[in-house]
Amino acid sequence: MRNSPDDSAMYNSEKYKPTYILIAINVIVYVYTSVAGSGFVETNSDLIYQWGQVGYSVIYGGAYYQLLTSMFVHASIVHLAGNMIFLLAFGLRGEEMFSVPEYLAVYFLGGLFGNVLSLLFLPLGVPSVGASGAIFALFGAVVIHARRSVGQSVIGAVIYGLFLLFLSSAPNVNNLAHIGGLVVGLVIGYALAVRRKRTTQYRVTYSYGNPLAI
Image 1 (cartoon, rainbow, N blue to C red):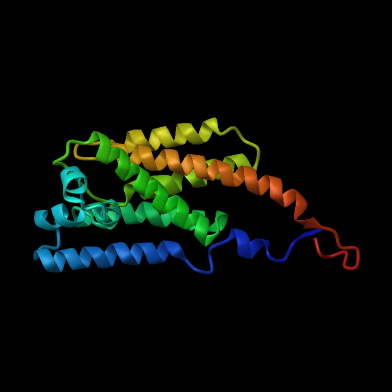
Image 2 (image 1 turned 180 degrees about the horizontal axis):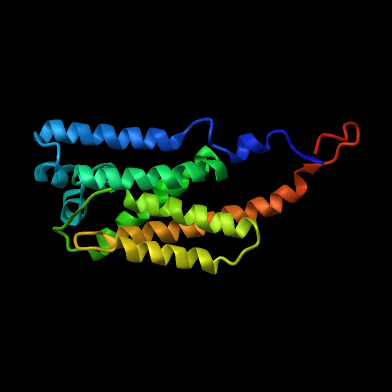
């Protein structure tokens, strides 16, 4: 018994390594803001207000681009390093589970939903930056997909997510972005696991010519 030959191409994004590409983009953006702001350890506040998400600028200034650009801007080198370590860990695992479109959908929809929650509930003058909302989405999708695919309870995935939320909570941390990303990741990861489990039942073919092709 063997799977259809295009299964690995459909479900595995390893060939394209989106995790490394996203890390490279984040690092390049940080280098740019460091050079433009004349400071490597912390990002210049003017650039944070320009490219980060500020509710007042988005709502009253029409700076809708900030919903996206803020996902690639980081407040400091420590902020960047921490996020990239988690992106590497969860992103590489996600590449084993999802196709490139699925992976990018989880990442960007999670990040955007976290930013929308921040826009709705954060004070309008408070800037928000960082990729953590998108990274929480990857984490949620990976954990729930892994558990649902093998028939384990999804409650465990939710508990893991809440535990990571608790560990990441600190002053000056945008918990709304984390929550928004986590929710999107859990929803998309669950939906993909259910759909994949259903469709793979019809992708299995049988071969009698080669008894070693299992």
